[in-house]
Length: 246
Length: 361
Image (cartoon, one colour):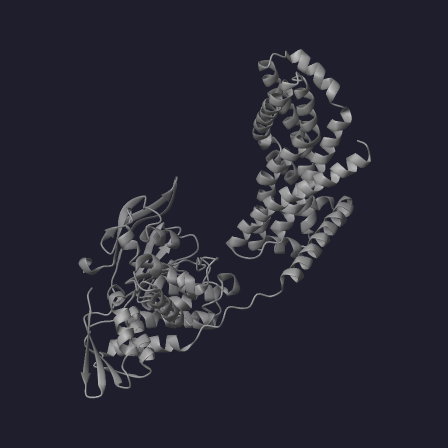
């Protein structure tokens, strides 16, 4: 099983000075899986994702992504990852189409018409085909997130990281985004790592989850999120899923 | 990684036969050939045979969809269910066309007039805020005034002193060459002192202020606009001009005379060094400077410096508060603040020159 894992976190810890965010975190993520990292605010979800995408070397342990140690990120590995940041992180001086074309321009020798066609398809996949010529300043937050996903999909990566894809979206847009993630997984076979604390979204899309807790400074539960909701006896897990004050 | 394309004619049908995985790595080499073949079917039916294609990503499916479109109509043969499903989704994604770029509103003359009107309105708002300031004392943050005074004034001292010294030195060297031909070396002092006191001191201090502080004001306020901080201030019932502009305006008007004076003193020191090299002792330079410069030259220069400081602050704040949305807007505001600050300073200098001339100052 270990050989097939796309992500293999081995006893990872993150400390900022004397403050430990989390420690002893180990997990694996496999192909075609939607893996959700969840937990309350400040538990280190985004920090763990930044370790996986090579932006933050762990204080202890290591994270292997596509077999590569992300303490030493490599361009060949990074181009095989797609990342959507919380606000979309679109380049403000480019249209949406140009944003999605950028990775194709940097990493392929495709003719410009092909790059344009491919980028337009990616925007079409996330429902933004008609907005291709708009600038990021002219679109809503939900559209920016979807465009962020389209750009992350540009190179057809096997592994896509999404940071809070549902945060700040209305329920209809959020449900549309969840369906898009499921479709992309089913039709393109992409593995998703989703950082989220949106319960509905987690229960809709998550195959497996890893729950971090701020007070425990680490993992308090792993498994199918629906089973955790229904069967876990851990009061912290129940507090999260039943929306109770801790 | 590699895929192949072969073309055959079967009866009245052109058949494009792909072999291998159609993915991002392989479609680049097939793109042009596929489209050429699809466009050149010459009345025949086009068939795309995918029997030997085990897998396909969105790049491959896009190539197939583009080929279908180029041919007008095409039959996809022997595609496995995954490829068929993906192709259906890509066709759907391509079915919606991009809306054209929104046309730019306005025109050169109209935009120019509106911009001029906005500037006049902003200066008016600042004047109103100054008039109302005694009644809005809480909105005028003294700690901000002190911070900007430190930033615009105290932290600029080394740069201003160095530039002033070098400017005096250069002016003295350059002017000594022609004056020496007439045996009038000592008048280098008159030239440098009057130039510095009346013009160069305030002007160069203003250029430094525009570059350091005007741009910083624009960037800071522009970022606040982008982050909705200015909107938050407004919705709290606080006047943003009083809270954000007046401390900056007061700080620059306070520090500019000081910076200008510092530049002039440093320039005189640089000139004194050159005069020493030319054989004139400091005492002789001092006596000549006292004779050459009048108090009104100095005062006139300092008044100009204060007005320049105010103009630079107003321009920096206006460009910042008028910044658009997005990260690019902040950079544009900072650039506009520097260009506008220097331009405004020179225009004001021209007005002062005419004014002083008419008043015989």
